[in-house]
Amino acid sequence: MKAFALIIVILCAGLLIYGTSDFPPWSDPESPASTHVSPYYIEHTIEDTSVPNIVTSVLADYRGFDTMFETIVIFTAGIACFFLLRVTKREDHESRLYHHLVTGVTLRIKEGGKLPDESEEFRRVDTEWVPYSLIIKITCRLIVPFIMLFALYVIAHGHHSPGGGFQGGVIIGAAMILFAISNDLRAAILRLSEKMATFFCSAGVFIYAGTGLLCLLLGLNFLDYGALAKILFTDPVTARSHGILAVEIGVGIAVMGVVVSIYYNLSSAGKHDEGL
Amino acid sequence: MGDLAKEFVTTYNYWVYIILMMIGLYAVMVKNNLVKKIIGMNIVQTAIILFFISIGAKRGATIPIIAHGHNGGEHAVHAADYINPLPHVLMLTAIVVAVATLGVALSLAIKIYQEYGTLEEDDIRTQTREE
Image (cartoon, rainbow over all chains, first blue to last red; front, side, top):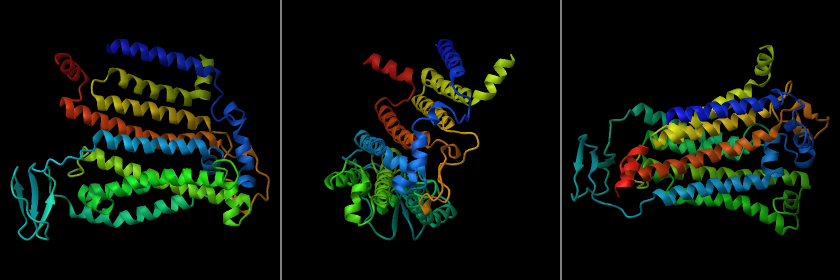
């Protein structure tokens, strides 16, 4: 089996390498990929959208449909994770660990045992609990807000520097995941509940599609942000720039929600109870 | 031999992506563990991303952000000065979609583990035959 697979792989590699003899050399300015549609994007981005970052203008304006459906793909992936893993029926009497803060004793409450009340004295810990490092916890708690601030910068400054909705949304999601790993899953869910994360998933897609629909209602094509000039009281080119920003914010919110909700579902196998 | 060396120097970016993709393909075909198969799938995705990004390169060009662009095109923009932005756009979305599909694949793996108690493919196969 292994030898058979190796033969197939080597044959495929041989065919593909043979195929590269017709490919243009690396970093050739005259290669077919760089000669047809991309020069138009490079030369017209300023006069069409007034966005210097060509990647952003192509992403959200020239190829807005593509990006909208990519956003819907990640939304669908988040929803698929939810439906595959989420356990709604709570099996309440698995054994749980509680930490008594006053004495520092850890109690294991077995199946059917009486759980302590929610109080300041007891704090629930994970069953596969290891004493954690205070340094890691505090450092992550200090870093998280700055990571989120940087993510907002990445989203908002995507017009002029590398960045945009996808990157910024992933950074916010990563900050939430960092918080969840350094504390525990319940602390993260307390900050950003599952309901809010799922709401963000759909709200982001809604902002994107809603911006497109607004353009349709204002008399131009779907996702033709020039139409927004009528309600923003600017010229169509600046309106395109603002439309791109709105769409990027939508993408960022959607990506953040999807990343966080996938993490919640994966790390706790859908129980949202004890995770990493 | 000189031809082959010249070929390699001008197109070695494609060779790298082919090698990466074949490593991923081999993992998907041969590995017994489902998580290793998922990792192989991700290596294939990474190879495709590398391929697209290397297509976008241009000799003597810089990143696709118009210099001094916020003044509104006071100077002419030449396409040869900026690398091709299109592969970057396509791969930007592909990376995030790869992460999302990785999440779906891992949640399927978790479900399979809950059902069969193992992620080894031959164990799962014997269990399904016994039933």
